[in-house]
Length: 435
Image 1 (cartoon, rainbow, N blue to C red):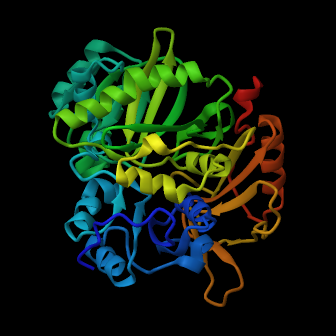
Image 2 (image 1 turned 90 degrees about the horizontal axis):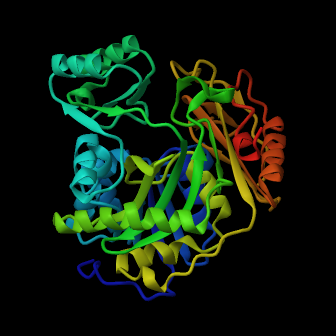
């Protein structure tokens, strides 16, 4: 195994390790397994939807995962969730000569520390909301009292997508600071970032980066609120659609030039070149696009939409990223649009009902541009089906010739699922249709 840093010949079959257990990982596994280049796929630890590929190793057991990769001759490792990336799994693998596509721990601070990300944006001249960073609760409280609502209060560290509070009243701003810095988010809330409130369409834009160059993928719109019409509490994401109807080549080029390329230059100048997925959370204001946040991995449920629309083989794309050769990659996308509707357990996001039997139809052989991606599912020991194992349970995803057809197909598929007490939105993608 001593020559593991060598580049595999372009057309060799490869063994792949995918780390994670959510809907994003099922969508990635679904795509990777379809590659003619994929000899063997492992998913650690996976869920009921990825059972054919699962390996019982936790995402935070970096040494165990690396030893498994060495033992099985893994040629490519890809990490889904942010926790292992920010924790240093890439560094652990590289130290052992293993090939892995993703940012090291220092580069992953783009997501792991909101303060680091904001400071980099300010230094690189990247458009974003005005902000202040606070280590002391009293200072943060004094600032929000001075600024007045609305403001956005963010935990500095990782908070499973729930660490940002849009405070529309002074009372909500105070409550957010108290909760975040008072222990509600653990170590992630030791510092807070307080930002100005921006108005506009929000959009998720995804690129793959090789340290110097970025390969733009696609944009999608996530639906964070639990209920229709963007009401109710924030969640990890109740659905997504893409591409957004307002997205076009001019807007993509503007964001590449004003955001993505300056970000890569700044990271490179800091001595931490960024390799991996760069997910830019944007808001399109009257003054132009501004960055809300960076993430260093694919989004969930946006990944379900991207994988459904990506016609190109994902394996050589990831290899090109590791080899620093994105200039040779030409992407092919299916025409039309895709929609993902998340079905969650009763009580989500405050709680989740576990152990509820879910009847999931098998659509794997229908080849109609649709898939049911598992997230918090647990396979029954007797092999008779699956039960709920957490909050967001399924990502029901469909592709259509246009957004209206994709929505209709996704919701028709939702109706085929037997999920007692399921919570889901009925308006995913409707804003793209102007309704």
